[in-house]
Structure formats: C-alpha cells, structure tokens
Length: 317
Image (cartoon, rainbow, N blue to C red; front, side):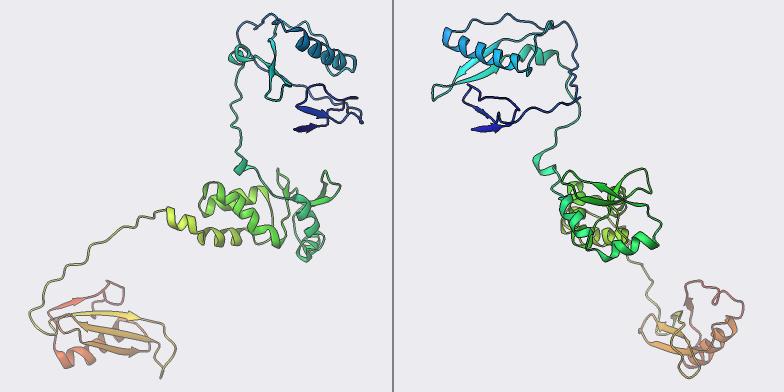
C-alpha cells in the first residue's frame, strides 16, 4: 500500500493509493518539458466495460473539478487501461510504448542507490556550533565564511571565497566526507585533494586527504606500481688482494675529536674496509689520507673506483 499526500479533498477510488485530503495543494511555478521528435503519437481511447468506465469517469471528473487536471487539445494521446489485480481491485495503466519511442532520452545517467550521498548536513550544522576551530577561523583566516539556511531551519557555515560554496566540515565528519569522495573511484592523492577541496573546506584538508589516500587498503591491493628494475652490476674478478679499491666520502657527521667526515676504502677481493676520519674534504686532504692509510700499508691499487665526485677528480689524487 502506497501513501501519497496529493493535496486532494477525498480518497481515491483506486485501492493502490490512499491520499491525504485534509490539506490543500501548494502552488508552484515548476514547468516540465518532454523533448520529442517525429510526428505526434495519438491513439483512440479503448472501450472499457461499464464497471471500469464508471470508476474512470468518476475519478477524472473529481480531478477536473478540483483543478488537478485540465482539458487538453494536444495532438499527443495514449490509451488508458484498468488492469485487474489479484484481490479484484483495479490498477490504472497507460500504454506509452509508442510515445516513449518518440521521446528523446535523457543522457544524464541515473545514479545508483549506492552513489546517493548520505551526508547529513543537519548534523554537520549542529557540530559547527560547538567547533572551536571554526570560531577561530571566523576571525583570523582569509576565508569568506557565511551562514546558509537549511530546509530544517538550521544554518550551515560555508566558504564563499571561490566560485563554489564549500561547507566547513568539523573534525568528526572529515573522514566520512573523504570516504564518500574517494570511495567512488579511488583516485590518486592529487585528484583526491582536488575533488575534496572543490566541495568542502577545513584547515588541514590537504594533509588529511594525502594521509588517508596513502593508507587506503583497497588502493594498496588493487593499484600496481611498476618500478624500473636495474640489472646487477658486473665487475671483473681482481687478480689479487688490494688490486682494486673502492673509495667514497660520508658526512658531515657529529663531531668527534675535530673530525666530521670519513673516507671509506674497501678492497674488492677481500672486502677489507678502512674508515679514515677527516676534518675537511678538500682534494689535498683526501689524497693525503688515502696515501698515508691505504697505499702506505697495502700498496698502490691497479684500479681505483669512485663516484667521480669533485674531490676525486683533482690532479692531486
């Protein structure tokens, strides 16, 4: 059973509708347009049996007298049917097959029930009244915050500094807003920030959306990030120990006995390592430390491998 408040003044005879007739109907200026193409579709009224015909006439007369419907001289017409239900009552039906074939369909997709937003702006308005952060933003921020009335009579604080009206979201509703936007298509960090920031506003919106997007479990499971895989380097086997040496610099480090840098030397064959403290990393200092602590003890290497830094390209070394 379907209950509808149609603003009528008595009950329908059709048992599938019970109308509240205690209230008058409201005036409005809404106009509906149905775009069509081709010639108008018309059909003669089909003959009804006396019982069904009397019910149809009575109801149409009642709606006509109460200005719910009006006589029409349109070239479009569709036949009326009264289908019998299981309990013996009647259900009015219209044969609009030919009419629908001439109607230009609406290209805007009909949203699914799962896509309909369940955000309760009345609850957000209640939370705004107790939000201390909003009170500080009203005085020290460059946002243009204004109150906008809701159908319930409450007021919602929104930012109008851009071309769109963006409601201010208190702390308790921010993650819920993020899940509504991000859960539709799971966009990346930049797109999620852009979508959220275009519709809502709060001080840490970019930081929060970035964190929640990075920690989204469905994104981590479904999105594949392909990284370039570099082949392992191929090195020649040295002829003997201390024939090939690798050197590099690290630092600056916490000071220790006046030294803040360290020269590392590694033998490729034996993996013997030396760490030599330095107070600076000039080319002369590096060359002197390598000669005194490595060459003087292990001899001159046949090859010296470096990262070609400016400290190792000097003529001194």
